[in-house]
Amino acid sequence: PQTRSYDFVISQVLGAPDGVSKPMLVVNGMYPGPTIEVNQGDRIVVNVTNLLENRTTIHWHGLFQNQTNYYDGTAGITECGIPPGQSLVYNFTLGDFSGTTWWHAHYSTQYTDGITGALIVHPASPPPVKFPSWDHELVVQVADLYHTFSSILLASYLSPWGIDGTAGDEPVPDAGVLNGLGQWGGGGDYFNFTLEANKTYRIRLVNTGSFASIRFSVDYHTLSVVEADGTLVQPYDVAGVTLAVAQRYSVLLRTDNSTGGPFWMRAAVQSDMFTYDEPGQNLDIRGVIRYGPTANDTALPVETDDPGVPSQPSLQDMDTAQLVPAVVAPAPPSTRQYPLTIALELADSQLFLGFMNGTSWTPLQGTTTLLQARAAFQGGGVYGTEGGSLQSGGQFMVTEDSVQVVDLLISNLDDGDHPFHLHGHRPWIMGTGPGRYIGQPLNATNPLRRDTFLIPAYNWMVIRFITDNPGLWAFHCHLAWHMAAGLLMQINSLPSKAAQLDIPQSIVSQCAATV
Ligand code: C2O
Image 1 (cartoon, rainbow, N blue to C red):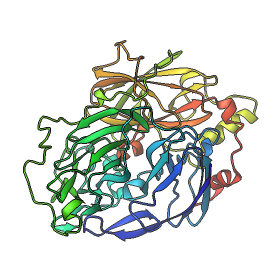
Image 2: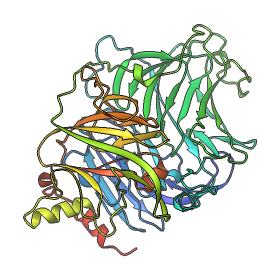
Image 3: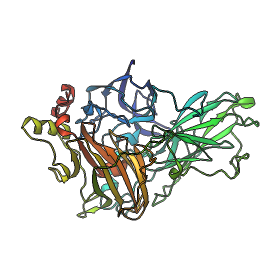
């Protein structure tokens, strides 16, 4: 194992990813920010300096932070946020995660403004036998793009008048980006890959966006899905892959189309959740792949109505229900079950808020729940009440002070789809379907394990995980607007152990800083 050190300097700049100038929050002046690429078992040390006018944090999405919950980077839960002008060194080992993931700010909607980057972890052990191999790797980060600063959009969204006169209508993006480049109103630019012909490329896809799902495809090429959120899956040939916000997939692509291209890569921003029209909106975002005879051309691919795969004209898009883990393993039986509802509504005609079991989350000011857990322990108690309960402040939280196999029996009562993410654990997705959860059968035989899963409107989903990782862990909708509206709850795993973690002074002192 090695130690991989990075310096992240977060600042506000003017950028123009799609040709339209806008204020952005970025790391090291770049969008997307630097890619972290490491091996499983490595130590990551990132010195983050905050040059913003507000606090900020960096969260390492999908990493477990076992014994280092305090470096999870969730504002109000594991840290108060790096005060303006100050730095924090995140220093942790990788643990069990390998595969494709990303890092992002976890403070209000800051990541919407550009604080995102890829995080690639190469596994310590080789893939299972007969798993396909690849020659080279690429990273493709897709995202929706807003021309307006996110804090302005958020204030409108939360207000009783909404962003367009209707409470609860989420801000709709203007465009999108593929590796930081998009097109709008005739401007912008195309991200280009120049590849070798007759090779197999593993494309690591990440949706680093805030609201819209994005369908990725490459004209005239088959994509073979081999990874979902760090879990290798049985190769699955598809025409396109739709990523909900914060999801990742790896796809294999053969550069063997004899016409030689160039070919469009498409990042089609999905509009099914949009409730109004954004003037001039462009949802048809492109990039270019070149190889073979046209590798050195600069011309763009020709326009076509039929970008399918000629050799397999009937090829369908990926259906997540068809994803099967490459290594089949049963889930352990659950020892605890918690019904959980998801809803969004205008509360007291004041603010549009997200609710989990009827309670909405607001970040703590001046302390964190992890520090509260420590204080409770030092006072001779245990933080939280065993089971599902309302914590002080009124929010629903699940607490287990022993190792349990927990089922969250989730019913989405909202008319929108929600990509939920659980920190610090890799849950089994036990089942999903229409309506509320009333005891429908679950798949304990070969469930997929992934950290970000889309719970469709008016559907149920059951996820299972083991409370063996001490700390306070966020469980939330990853749509930036919903996270900021409080559609988030905490899992309080082993609070007696979490209270004894060696929380660095640099984290504790953040909370006392006046900003
Ligand atoms: Cu991608 Cu709570 O995080």
